[in-house]
Image 1: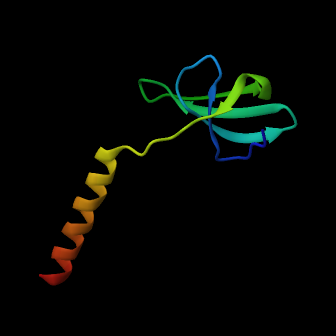
Image 2: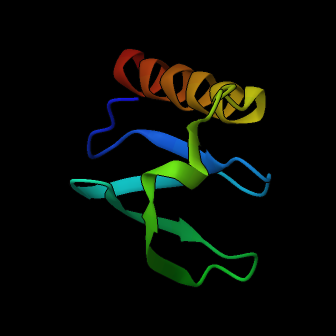
Image 3: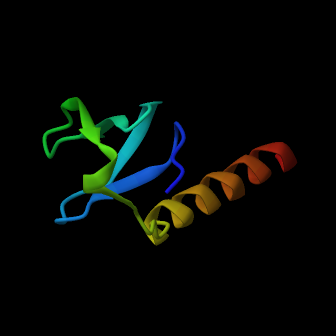
Length: 77
């Protein structure tokens, strides 16, 4: 499994998605936000990670569309 900074991974045992910050051989530095918004950083062995399937949050897409519509209305006004 080839990993690079910016990839989203998970522990093979489960848990939340982690973002790869750096790759140094088999040492993968990952970052993630805790439930209270705290930023965590940990170096993990490649053997315990797998690529995560990331599904876009539909609520975020709706917010982006609403912002775009507001910007368009402001341009017309």
